[in-house]
Length: 145
Image 1 (cartoon, rainbow, N blue to C red):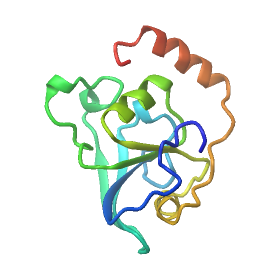
Image 2 (spheres, rainbow, N blue to C red):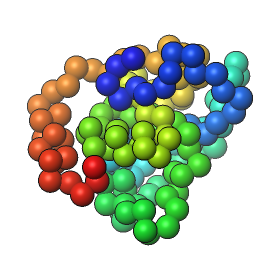
Image 3 (cartoon, rainbow, N blue to C red):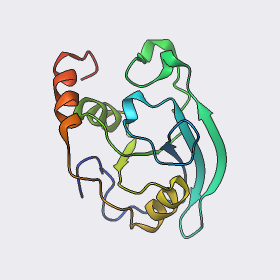
Image 4 (cartoon, rainbow, N blue to C red):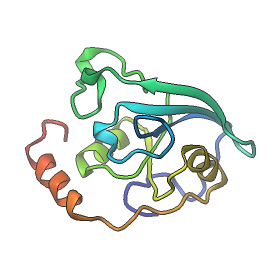
């Protein structure tokens, strides 16, 4: 299990909703989960191809980096799994506390990322780069710990 993949090796499930962070056009898996406004939602059942429900555009104040629990339920609260390319440790810890499964990947196709997650063969994330240091510094000063 790599960094950002907190799903257990025996991840049995009946049904769930998966949210994949995307770029603005929804054609590629998005970069940084805490800053992403664009998400694709999928319904998934074990052994079946995930069904794309459609895109979700978060209001800027609902982006995870800015969202506070007292603002009410988050639009992605029903998603049991979040898939993205990168995230800071603060974001990963916060999602784990909420019981949300997180998975970082180097896969660029959002549909394939959701299907590969269900099949248990999601590509691992790329090695951390320079931006990971920026995230670490931001997490030091973040109220989201």
